[in-house]
Length: 159
Image (cartoon, rainbow, N blue to C red; front, side, top):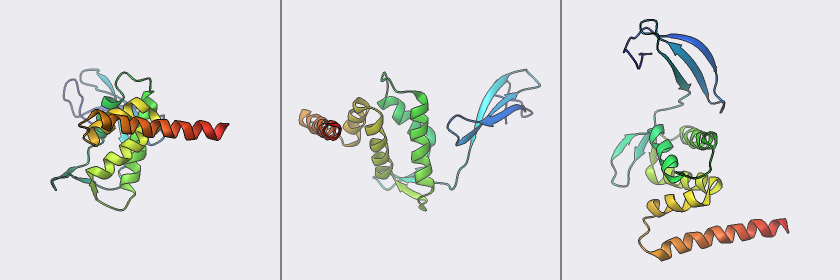
């Protein structure tokens, strides 16, 4: 692993342990050349995934792009970073274990929407407004009514 500080290719692992989500290994490293310390994460990748965009264009699946989507939707919302990581890991695992190597951006978007629905209603509406290409206030109203109907069903089950 190359040192992010000096670029040396001779770094040493000082400590390895499972990450909190249990789906990756956390490694503490040190560079003998500059003394820099840094952390890396190692994850299992079952297969190379390709995302097929609406235009038909293909590009490699980028887990970091998925993380950024969650972070944007959840900006300034009270959701713990570990919950975001678990949601992203769950989506990546489902995609990798689906048996398909070509995944549509629509399928990924639907999985993100489903995950956000259980994490935070505001983030769900934010993401839905972009994903579903809202153009009128009525579009927001429809989604909010869906959420309110779900809340009504959930609280009705408790009564």
